[in-house]
Length: 109
Image (cartoon, rainbow, N blue to C red; front, side):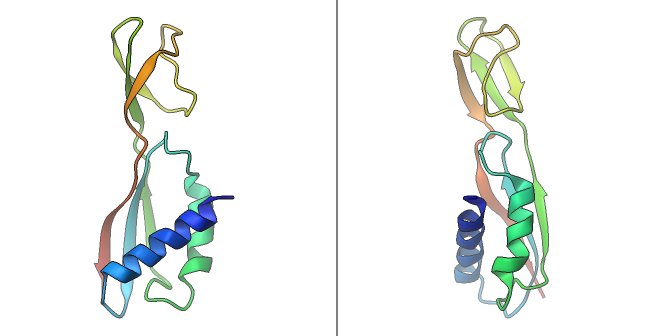
């Protein structure tokens, strides 16, 4: 489960960037094509945040769909699965969005 390492990295990055004694809310963006499982991040978050300024913080995760451009038919389409296929059946698709994992916001007390 690589989500544990990812969650640890996110918590460390937030703690390095925010000097406040208590963080009350953390919002993450985890794109549907990122390969990261939001439920696993939620599960790991409380464990990783224990004993830090993030302990007890509310974790909000936004999961935007991806988008891509098909080279076979030329359309731009929404993608929600890491196995990228256009509705025309082609796999010759350039992913335009949906692969991000980023901290969107942090709220402090």
